[in-house]
Length: 231
Image (cartoon, rainbow, N blue to C red; front, side, top):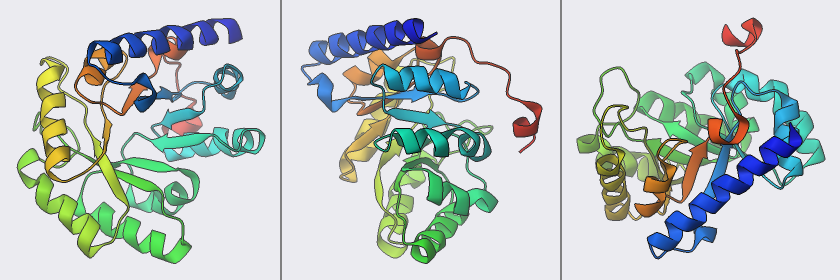
């Protein structure tokens, strides 16, 4: 497993470098988030052994089962929450994650602000934009983004550093990456988390600072243990 994951990481980095070069960008400005959701701790250890330090998890409980021990061995590990966050998991999320990418509604913003004030821990926050305005998806509508960003930063004092999006599966992702870039630009936000295994090279060309890549690094997702799937 270690050799395969190391080879996959090298291939992804090579493609990021090529995409950045095409766009006239420095590939050092693009951070690879290895999406380790449903992957066992051994797979994460293999990626760590290959030099990867930034990881993304979808579920608070799954991350709690894997990462505290890994972080003891690798204190420079950086953990992003890239899945939806329930308000009853805010305390655990603020304690565990370094970046919360899925700030997507006022109630969650209020809960995060309260917990950050209580705990003194302030993970970076990215606001999730529903660029396709899909009713089944989380995220702030593009037309409401500016007001929500201002409220999170100015009234609540949240450490908002950027934006995240997941384009519709059946649409050209470049259009959505361009929209996210424009919203970030007019709000002076420097972080753009966009692009996954199928489209991260396009995202790099449109200014992504973070790409979230899972299957291209770890292979197919594994079934989540029933005890964690229920949480």
